[in-house]
Length: 318
Image 1 (cartoon, rainbow, N blue to C red):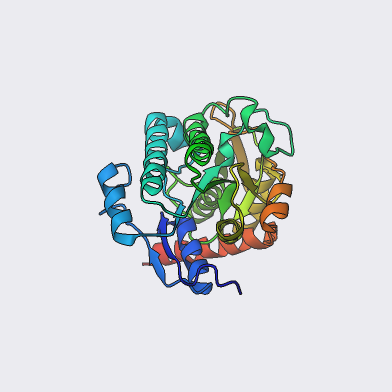
Image 2: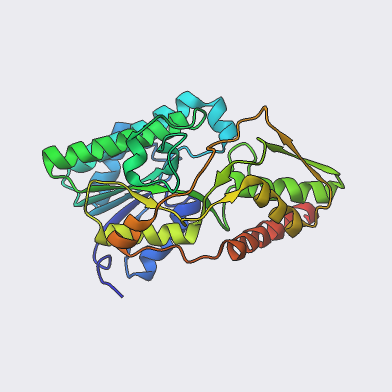
């Protein structure tokens, strides 16, 4: 195994979160002992003085920036200003503070929500600049997109080594189960499990079910981040995805079968459906960092369902 991380001091913002825990675990498996994980309660990264204090204390050679306000489509719709401002200000200030302190490398996790609403499929990194994102996701997507511009500008003017990854919709054990902030897979799992428990005959789902979405297991995403941290040193963003897509209707049917729900799924087209098509070209990731998603989607979905079901049963029998 590479010794790249062994002697590095690494800050992982968002390191206590869903994805962050997998990244920290991966760092430790690679021999990294000096890992610093700021906590939101004591280090609000929207404040410049907190960022400066963190970097002055940790003195990192590498920063992996995962922290952000990441929510489901409903919460993003209801809080567009906060989604835009919080994600932009954290990343922009962190990059400037890192640049001032001579941090060797900054890895920024962006999002495929930055892509234009009607981008061609499979979507390449070059398509990023050819249109405006899907309207509900635009505040979050544009905030992350601006960080790509900042990264490229800082490399050009200062020679600062920052890289940007565009991650697909994540799923896996440990995802948030709060219906106001969770992504589509944990939200659907919770809806169907709750319906079975209550004996409901219908489950309401947003949109019309026709939207196509690409999902990436959290463990695969963490591996891609660590590969990029070690091997990628260019300004152009990199898609981190599986290269596959499935319809939301098909996803709902799979989860219904897992849960044992035999009732009717009712689609509500008055609610936002999200990106119409979501399938990302992964050739740059394969070429530049040797990454290819390994987790089979059916196996990953079963694993996620089992994780949730265990906690759901524990909560209802407590």
